[in-house]
Length: 253
Image 1: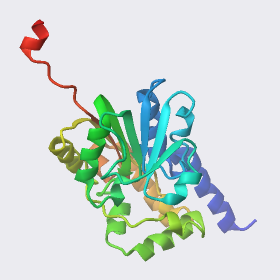
Image 2 (image 1 turned 90 degrees about the vertical axis):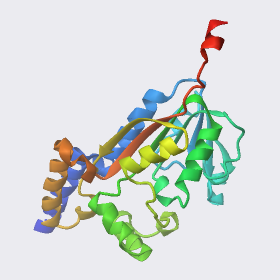
Image 3 (image 1 turned 180 degrees about the vertical axis):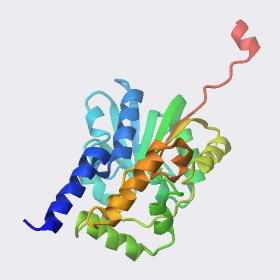
């Protein structure tokens, strides 16, 4: 067995055992989602794709699950009710849903403020929005923001193999910081419940000896030290649609 293969096995083991195979942010996001879901809820998986990360599928038998996406291919692949549509023009009545969630969608939005207003419109008072998206201050996103889409496709081929290009959409990163999310929430009448920053580890460098060890140490450092949290890979954002205020006169009746 060659030394390079042994090294690759070691790097893959580190990614699997310490970084959840590069899906730590998704794992934390799904954990928070499980805490929010209650049986009987109407939940909207926004930008659902075919749910390849198995995010909404577990709730299909206990909730009313609806998916919405711009890609017409999804209609025959999503596990539950599906509507073709944009996040800035959701095809639903006001106050339809108890919970809205989307993962790795916000970074692609041309008009995030419009999407937030639409999500609030179709969300019931007191309902929650849960978002998972890359953090602009991560070196991965800074590199992606400064490079052409062709570079992203090349990196995707290295990580995932060929055949995934159709699912690699251009990224814009128009609201991908904690501060920007808080401002957008305020502008659209939503409350910020929490913003969590999570790192996925040195996912880009698993096949590159030397670089992997350097960036593994970097990720361990930013994961440990809260002062460096803004360098982490991903944001998990939870928002709330406020309940209508009850006036003193109404309360006395």
